[in-house]
Amino acid sequence: MTDVVLLTGAGQIGMAIARRIGHGKKIVIGDKNIKNAEAISKIMTEAGYDTEIFECDISSRESILNLINEAQKFGEIAYFINAAGVSPSQAPIEAILKVDLYGTAVLLEEVGKVIKENGCGVTISSQSGHRMEQLGAEIDEQLATTPTEELLDLEVLQPENIKDTLHAYQLAKRCNEKRVMFEACRWGEKGARVNSISPGIIVTPLALDEFNGPRGDFYKNMFAKAPAGRPGIADEVANVAELLMSDKGAFITGTDYLIDGGATASYFYGKLKPE
Image 1 (tube, helix red, strand yellow):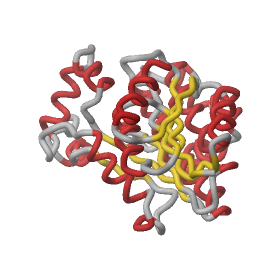
Image 2 (cartoon, helix red, strand yellow):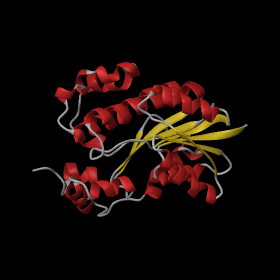
Image 3 (cartoon, helix red, strand yellow):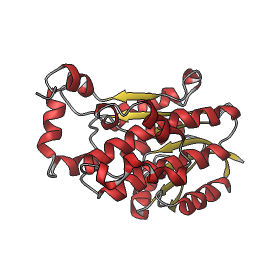
Image 4 (spheres, one colour):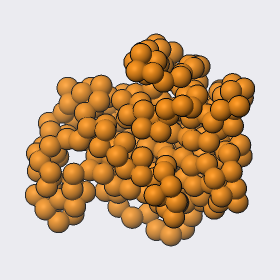
C-alpha cells in the first residue's frame, strides 16, 4: 500500500503544494465542485502524478468521513493538505462559519485520528486572522478546545456578534490557527505534525473574483501598500508548505506561518495603518 496525500480544496494553492510532495504517492483530491477536482486532476495526471477525485463538502462531517474512507482504500494517509474554503465575497456569514471554521475543525479532528505515524498536515488559513482585534485568552481557548459539534454555538460566533462577512471570515481564520495548536497536541501522540499557513493576497481564481468584486479596490490597495508591493503566487505558499511537510520541518508543529508580503506589518505599522 502506498502513502496517500489527501487534498481537500481543488484550487491553485492546494495543487501547488501537492505537486511538491506528491510524486510517487497516491493523491486523493476532494472538492464540493467535482469539476474543480477534475480540472486539477487532469493537470496533475498529465504531469505524471497519480490522482483520484471524490466529491466532498467539508461543511458535512459525513462527507468528510466518506472522503477519508475512500482515501484509506489506497493506503495510509501520510500527508494532509486542506485548501478548501470560501471567501467573504463568495458566501454569506453562515456558510463561511460552516465551511471555513467548522469544516476545518472537523477535518483536523478526523484526519488526526487516522494520520500515519510521523505523518504531517497543513491547513490554509489567512492573513485575515492576524489583523482582527485580539479576542482574549478565554475566547481563544474556546475556539481551540470546544468540541467540534459545539463550536458554532459559541457566543462569539452568534449572528448578532458578527458585523459582516469579512468579520466572519476573520473569526474563522483565527479559529483555524487556534484549532491547529490544539490538534497538534493530539497529532503528536502519533509523532505526526500539523501546521497552518496564512497567505495574504495570492493570485488565484478566487482572488481574481475578489479583485473584481465589491472589495476589489480594498485588496488592490492592500498589496500596493505592503512592503512587497505585489500579490503572491501559489508556488510561494508551496515553498513554505514543502518545508513544513519535509524532514527539515520536523521540529515545527502547532504553529501558523504568515505569508503576506508584509501586508499585516503595514496594517499595524506602515502605510495600511487605519487612521
